[in-house]
Length: 334
Image (cartoon, rainbow, N blue to C red; front, side, top):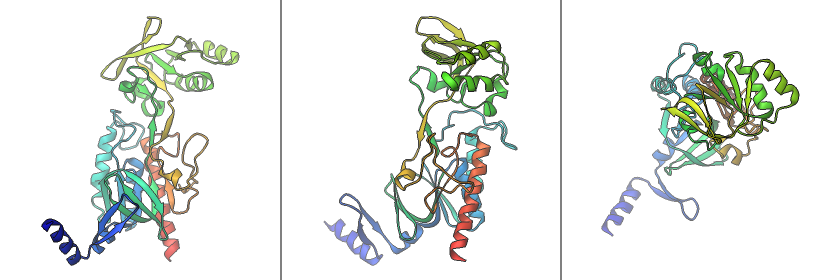
């Protein structure tokens, strides 16, 4: 009881008030604390697009908060490629370097947390995190990425990003001319096979069941010596994510070094949709050339808006988003 009295007395002395947010939420705030939680822009997602947006806004003297949950899609990918000046570096090393560089900009803050709720306000937006922290901002940038939905084939998840790949432009050069497979069927199998044939001639489609190819497609593939195997997969045999062979339900195996796969995905954050942002037919956030969503004040950049999943592209989109957000803020106040 004495502890409770001391707390209440201290609360009165420091200007604390109790704010009730629903029946099950109670937050204590001070005037100073509230001011510290108000930003020009909050960026949800602190990977490449989010960090790039933060740098553009920091250089524009904006008060910025980057909130990151630490779950990038490429977290087990050993190396990043096709990014000038960064080619061959581990993705996590690139992100770490970016975070260190952002420390030079005193108006930019980073916090490790997950945004669990977002609402519109007269001044912009109010966010609440998993840790129970409230934040407010005039503008939002969703650089929250996507979550890959991997098939339940034993060994697939361990190889994902290492020897099971999604992008030849990111990794194709390093595995060129190796024994390569494609996990796909139908039009997707034909499309990916034609693309990957630029990097290797030792190529086979593994459709994990019926291939659903048109006769003309099947004939074209065979003309290019691209095999088609429709036997069901049992597992991927690997050593620390390095693919060694495919094992099938009928007990047969084939040696394989690389497997390309285009897996389904979902948005890592559902909050853009909660706030009314449109989603494309492919499942990406819909943005215009300035990275603006259909909701005024909300921008998006990175893997959550495009199939072009490269670090370089994410950085470019994040930079553009930061610049356009700053331009909008200027137009509203000038």
